[in-house]
Amino acid sequence: MADGQPCRTEATDANIERAGALIREGRLVAFPTETVYGLGADATDDDAVAAIFAAKGRPHFNPLIVHLAEPTQAERYVHMTEAGRLLARAFWPGGLTLVLPRRMDSTVSLLASAGLDTIAIRVPAHDVAHRLLVAADRPVAAPSANRSGSVTATTAAHVVESFGIEVALVLDGGPCRIGLESTVVDVTGDIPILLRPGAITAEALMAVAGHLAAPEGLGGPLRSPGMLERHYAPSKPPRLNAVKAEAGETLLAFGTNAPKGALNLSPSGDLREAAANLFAMLRALDQPSSGRIAVMSIPEEGLGRAINDRLRRAATPAVDTNRERR
Ligand code: AMP
Ligand code: MG
Image 1 (cartoon, rainbow, N blue to C red):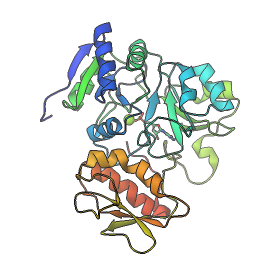
Image 2 (image 1 turned 180 degrees about the vertical axis):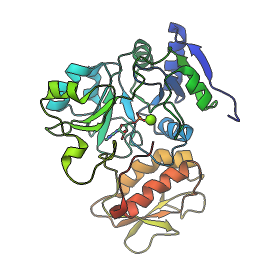
Image 3 (image 1 turned 45 degrees about the vertical axis):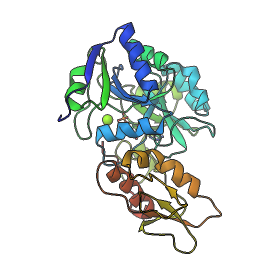
Image 4 (image 1 turned 135 degrees about the horizontal axis):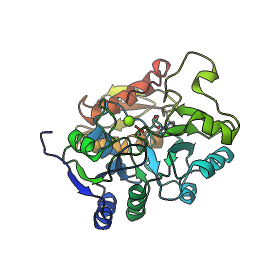
């Protein structure tokens, strides 16, 4: 890393308190869970969530898992379904992530759920993770703490090697007990759907839920994990690389050369700010009564690549394979 390494500290009470304060300030903190190390940020802060994507160097946005200290907190952010309640009671705290319908008044960042109407929630069973979530006093969005394309981090040393000082602190809680990512299950409907195999086995889920739809079981071609995740797209395909709005269009602007009065992803041309605003602004402009959205060109660099990836998928929905590349 050109810009040094993040600070690694033992997970003492004082350091966990400090980590919680850093999260509240919008900084990134890596922390251990029983599955893998997570790269955490305040899930209610768009800018902090954008910083996660910037640090991971992912060329696309995928929805992140939102971590909570207690199972009862889930209902503040999502609607708990019957299937969700059943599985949460059996496996929380633990290595199970539940995808649930977002509450209208949910304070979780739209970027954290990649604009979707669902939010993935997990309550980790790890003492340090639990104490950090209590100290942060808010939901923490966290993907696995590795850079895009590298192996998942299961020790603090892995995390330190992968990141620079954009990560404020790495809490060292020793190696992860399970070392495998959480199982992701969609419980928005009556039948739970296994989106990603992981720490909790399909057999264990079946034993509790009675039934479980595997992606392969839904018909059609074989799907890889994560492929069932639908991507958010405005109802009408946006027009890209617009300079100004044509008749019947609303402009989503970017940068300093934007026409006055247009909603602007970042008037100063800051890609992190643009990422933070992307889904909320697309949703704000995507009204049944309004025309199509015309988006100004976004530079294809840094977070701009992930922004353009999402805009291109929205502009050409037929070729969206929903494929996950982690
Ligand atoms: P990671 O954070 O790297 O462990 O990956 C998170 C996993 O959760 C990915 O496989 C995502 O596709 C999945 N996921 C998170 N949120 C959702 C959601 N709202 N709907 C479907 N899948 C999700
Ligand atoms: Mg990962």
